[in-house]
Length: 93
Image (cartoon, rainbow, N blue to C red; front, side):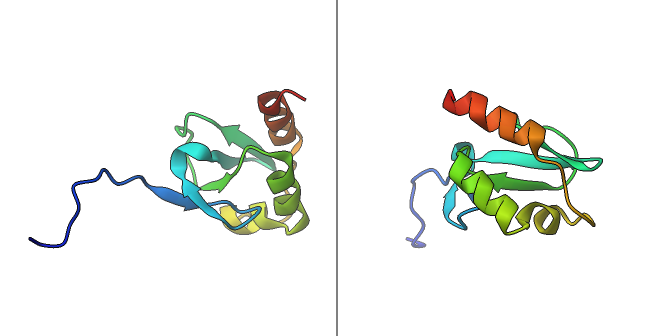
C-alpha cells in the first residue's frame, strides 16, 4: 500500500474574511470586474478569484482588512455593493 486513501478528495480554499479553510463548495468565489467585486457563484468568470463565506460577518471582516484588493491583486479599493447585495439575498435578509 502506498498510504493513499480511497476517499474522495475535496478541494479546499481559504476565506479571505475569517481566514478559515473550507471546502470550495461552501465558499463564494469573488472576481474583480473593473473597480468592483463581483460574486461568481458558478465559478466560471475569467480572472483571479478570491473566496469568502457567504455570510455578512466574513464579508465585513474582509472589507475591514482590505483583503479583496490584496487577494485579487488590483490597485486601489474595490466597490462591494453588488457582493453585499448577493450575500444579503442568499441569507434572506
